Image 1 (cartoon, helix red, strand yellow):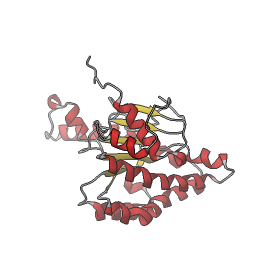
Image 2: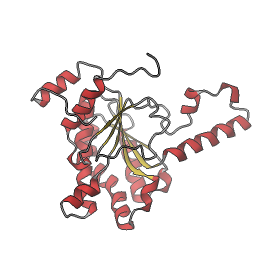
Image 3: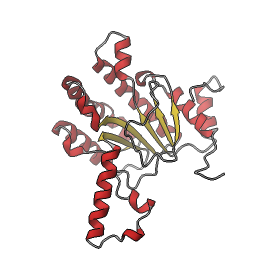
Image 4: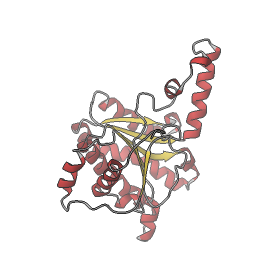
Length: 252
């Protein structure tokens, strides 16, 4: 999956060629390697997170340009609270800084901000910044920039099961009518198509409790590139490889 593809020298030519074929409608990214990027440069880990924030902006703009409908970014997991308090505090400031800096541009690009995760557990300043961005962009009809903030897939699935059981006990839902489509409506991603393509950076090859239900038939693309070094060219490469695969969904 890490093998480079032969492609035209011009990024614009590659973009045009990619857009001639079906582009993944929903791309999910596990943005990994910010800390290692900083450590490699003898910089504090927070410097890597700050640099990674800039990459979010350019990848969002490129994905929107390519016609991607949803871009889900794993920004902070329920397990990330275990990190040092100083690092967590900095990470909780990034959404406010990112949206304060780039929201006008994203709004001009017709991007719509959404979130999945346990938002009520975020610090008030983080929660307010994200909710304000969602409110300001709710009428936009372009790419959905979906931040997974304080998100964990196992907890999401357990809460979905609890909600379904509660409605069954109230007679709202019959257990016999439960199927995959109905269960999906109890998940945080209700209304969103499951990801077509998952990208994970930094050489790690695992899901880390990310969208376990939704990724059942997703194509995976892993790269050793650390997130702060991830470029538009890497995104194009991932999509090119996606387009060269045959998706059978269990068939032949």
